[in-house]
Length: 192
Image (cartoon, rainbow, N blue to C red; front, top):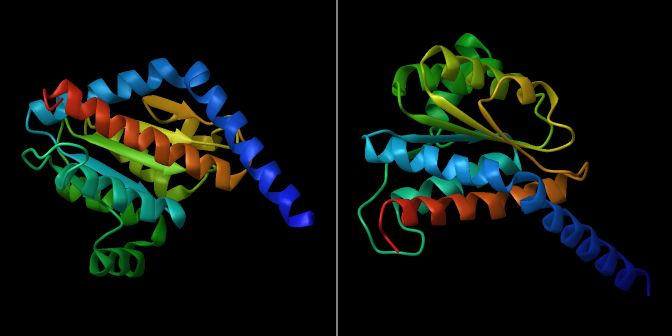
């Protein structure tokens, strides 16, 4: 009985979060897809980053573009700033953990690129420093956030805010949105 209630409560909470997702964020998701597609059409790169589970999701989504999502097509320029452990540990050691993403973005990014950050709280300094660096470099920024958005809410250009305080529900929503972005990008680029 107890296990059944846990399952039912989790599914109900997930469904409620997803039900409000498009109502609250449909326009932002569409705008984010167009921003990414425009960047790629103009030779740009989509950069992704996050901490913990969001780091894994960043790697997952970068590969959906550089590899393939639904269509066999040319690889699309996409990099997870979480992937290079030598860079991460070097930068954390020499410049501080709060600079692990912003320093890579400074070295790899250029105007017209896109930075997508995934953060359940929006209060991680390494995420916010990357958003600040993106603005300095004329790199568009998209923040997928939860728990009210935190500091990232006022830094990112495009914000997709999940109406939940549950880390699990926020992360599940981020994955769905990221997959939708990949589908929008393929459609915008003519890979339907």
